[in-house]
Length: 195
Image (tube, rainbow, N blue to C red; front, side):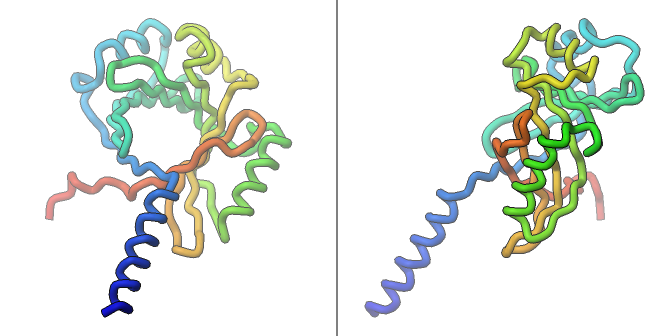
């Protein structure tokens, strides 16, 4: 009886330790209609961007918050503009390649990835312009001029292998390539598929 109690207590402790130690947020993104997107966010886009193509609207939910994202193409670059649930700008991201990142920054990012994953493959790489550094107009201007600024962030989505197995991870680095945040991504939403 005493051995069973010890096993149960130890198992409960390990489970709680894993949950408390986890720094991951689970997110899911799905496409929505323009009418479901916050009106203030649409007005912000229309005031600050012209001549864009292929705009699509998304709603993103995770364990902490709900946000909205508009993805569009302008001047041969893919942009992602993220807003909070009230339609206030959070950040603007540009889809880039590894060659677009300064060498020292990318080296620091690689060191982190090599130290924390047995194996990994980069799926997506984005340069991020957070809105808290400038006014909305300056954030749009800096992002759409593709400027490299000291407060930019880099977001990498990878398939990474750890001891538990393979998972998709979204990792945020600062302008110098220093680690800021990590979260796991859920698999693609297939709720629309009917069997």
